[in-house]
Length: 101
Image (cartoon, rainbow, N blue to C red):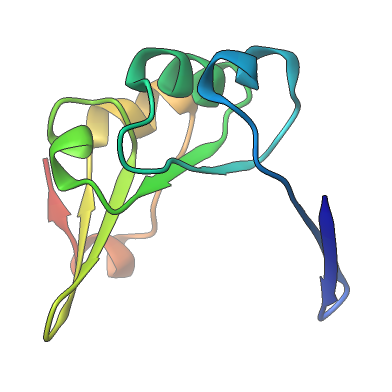
């Protein structure tokens, strides 16, 4: 486990297998490429947490809420249905900058 404090916010990072997420409490999950998508999105929804990945296809099919891709330019993809199921809302100004799925 790694703990970092920035601007009054405490961030605790740890590696957890996708099958173990259901037993954890968290506010953000960064899903590794190849992670088992169903347990990840189920745990994210149960915790009302944002699921972020680099895998755009995982966002397109609803296994994660947001994908960030950087190859020359930064692109952000958001799955509206996955966000709604997790109880996550994005500001209008942010939504204007992303590709919604």
